Length: 264
Image (cartoon, rainbow, N blue to C red; front, side):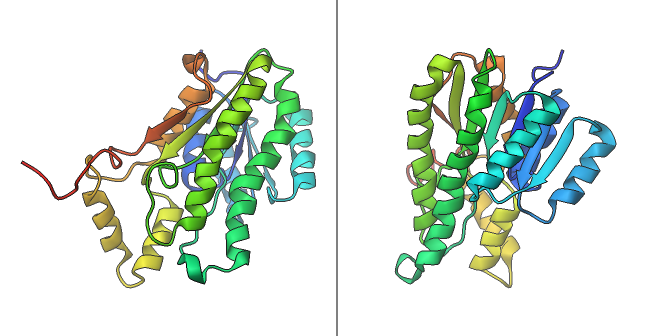
């Protein structure tokens, strides 16, 4: 029996990037998956996955900033699948901009999706998750914010650090309901977000930017979305039954070096 067999998982931002990696791994392990995403790629993603996982994958185009629409979508998922066992709060945004030049609108864009969106989906799901004997929430934070940061990432870093506090606070509240809440702190994973940041840094040669990132990672490469999916599956399964309120780093050792230029 697969470790997520008969589990129903809601995954936000699952149409592409890290979310898609999580979706694929969860389906592999037997879960039924419902994606919440606002991307135009959602329809194609669902269509492609249905070829191998018909009846186990569905999707709803919803802006997670809209709490009412989120509640309506979650209710539809429960009506279709009967329950919710797992929530993966993956949806997030990152736009690089110098702090002094950042508009309030761009600041709020990060806060509204990365923090309030996670809040909205969690609140909509928890009342159903309480009905299960056990359930798991996994929030996608980042090493950016809690551990490191680069110029231009003030808004993003703030929101991702906030998600660690959210994870711990929520874990303390719902542990009595047999709901575990943990966070994943990814370093550089090869996603459309990273590709976009590379293009913002060097429009003419984004590949060079990615190569530069890889050189700064002890493992010498960026992670892939399936590797992150495997960690999410672990935190969502009974294999991690005694873990709650924690942030797990997956970064190829990128936050390990004290001095990048020092070597023997």
